[in-house]
Image 1 (spheres, helix red, strand yellow):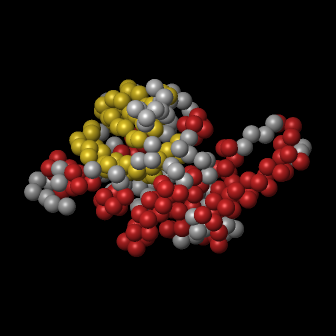
Image 2: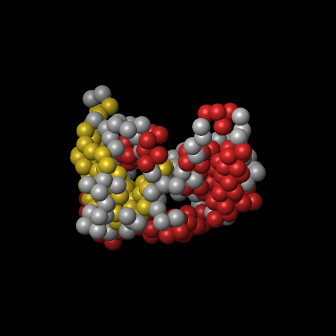
Image 3: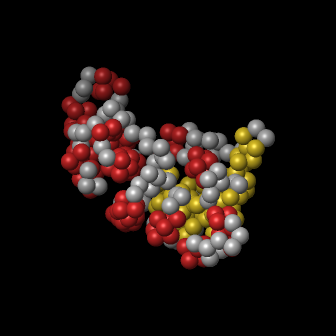
Length: 263
């Protein structure tokens, strides 16, 4: 099932489900994301959004269903394989190497793309040194593209919260993904930071030519940036459509606000 003009899906999820003991956390979830799309998955707390993300990135093996990435069924592959084939993600709780600099965080992620032989690496062969110099240049260039150059040598834990969020996205981009998954990127941000984040996400999609899927509680962010939205509740898909369609969907309004609510 390769990507073709007739089948341009980067990601296709079919009947995905997972059980934890006697709990069916996600049940028969389906999803499709085309090349260049910016999609969103929303839902109330405990709806199963992060569990879905964890299956899409290899952290949780699904109990049932299939995940196709660029035409290949990737269920059963390791987390490393998911990253190597072009899937990267951020986390709701920032997971930077806090005691390392911003540049060092990017370099660690970039090493996913580097292949050294054992002996050249052990003896620091000229080819290894050249590649390390190239890698540092590439990492600095990435920091510059995301307006993070001034923080390159600052310890990650010392950076403002919003900058840490941007650095985590930069670290994900350092793996050269084809699909970028953002797990609640607006968590903990003030309204001004959320506005800047929305512009950044749209810019990243266009600048890096990457397909993006995000889960988010911040409804306005999702409505402003996503091409289409899927809504889950209690592990089940309850609605999908454009932001305008989701905003007026009775099942979505009831899930978030109860009967009679209004966005």
